[in-house]
Image 1 (cartoon, rainbow, N blue to C red):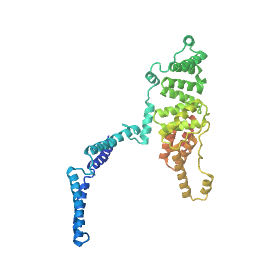
Image 2 (image 1 turned 60 degrees about the horizontal axis):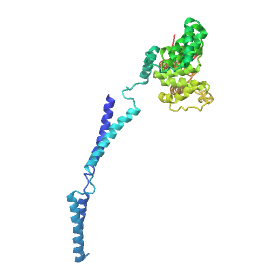
Image 3 (image 1 turned 135 degrees about the horizontal axis):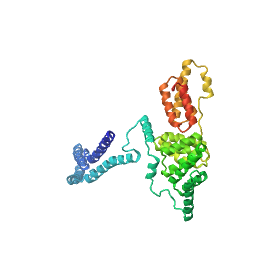
Image 4 (image 1 turned 90 degrees about the vertical axis):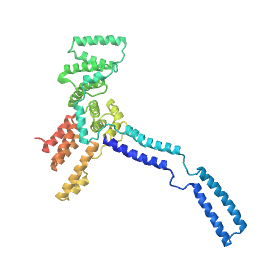
Length: 414
């Protein structure tokens, strides 16, 4: 509220000054007719002086007096009638002043409504991360999300023959609940029909039948059906399915796409961008999930505050910058004193930390940063980096294990 009061007061003060200047106009200046009168009177005095000095004759003096007098009468008439050429109409001044107030006050509010976030409080980075974590932990369930999707929003109108076949399939699956082939067919056909709520229930039966033999693709299909049934929302149940898929295949592209979508939905566009950027780099250019990432990643980069991201041409992978010190850096370090070498290490660690914060990186780089901070004795910063890396690689068991091992070696865990 205080922000609005301050900004409104400033805008009003500036607009008032502009309006006052417009209303005052040129009131401090001399009217043109009055100025003309003074000039003409001076000319009459000058004529008398010239006549006295003999510069002009009496006839010329009389003629000039007559002409100047005529001009004096005309100027005086203008002054009396208020026809000064420099005066501005009062109504025009009032209109211009009102427009200035409207543009300054109304225009500033309109710009803020378009570009700003009305009602959104100022929050530190730590507060935003905590808010995102809270949003993620307290988001609605799959059932609640499906209840909000309008009835018939996903179900397609099937042909009579398809309806008859689906009824037979549903009956057969209900009579033989452990029939894997029937459950798979039911899940696929319900999804093809657009009945995703029934599809993910059938896919849950597939997972139950397969047990430990269920693949990453089985879990991704399950999550995909739930997300589609919820209108694109990644619920806690869908997240659990994605975790199961990534446990079996950490490089599964569709699962990584949905994980990024989850992060975007819960207020972490920075993590979403890094997840999608890595998946975009690793995945085949013609994969459906890569096409979905390409359609959204530029907006995600903007939301994450990444200003130097350029979407690579289709079929190309994003260029990867060189990592770590160069050979020249290592050679220069050999002739340094212990203090100079330590200062160089601190500089390199800070550079790595800044780059990971802005651009992200793989688990090895985050682990290297944790270890370097541990060597430097900066336990507090090492712990903060470790906690951040855990939120980034929660969906990658291998990456999470790598950063946790780095934390253990740095003495952050028992």
